Length: 235
Image (cartoon, rainbow, N blue to C red; front, side):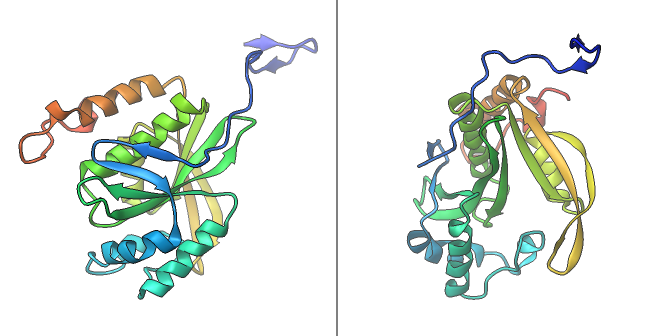
């Protein structure tokens, strides 16, 4: 603990710290997927087809709106996201098909403090429970910590969104608490659960993700041999 001249405890000094760059013109390439800046006109039609692979709209329950019923509705939704200057929206492309299969964003970006959030995650069934979803998050985390030098990456979700909470912990994020009555969305209350991954923990998480994504961890049919949790360090 450090004590200042008034006898008060203060945080550790960061004499070498400099503000981080904002994610910009992002292109992230992996073995299963690549991510690029959202282009509404380019992506909306294929994304609509991908989202329609689901039999219903349950994947959109905890998003800001319900699943669009038409390509035009999805285009309008994507254009609204793209018009929000606080978001860096990305499209996820399946390397095998070269088609868009989901969207995600860097958000709540605080360059001066080196903090950002991964959010607005909208995976289609073509991503869910596949290596492509894990690799997409890995590529974003690697860009956040290794390329841009951020200190903290956050993950927030509705406290009732069990799949999102499981995903956060699977990816190595630490649960930090619950903000009660955080927002009103779709006419209902939302308590928000906060998770975070910090730069001191990132090397161990990166190693776990890379071991899981390694070709040797998949059989000839593409099935994992070991679960990510077997590589992930304990909190």
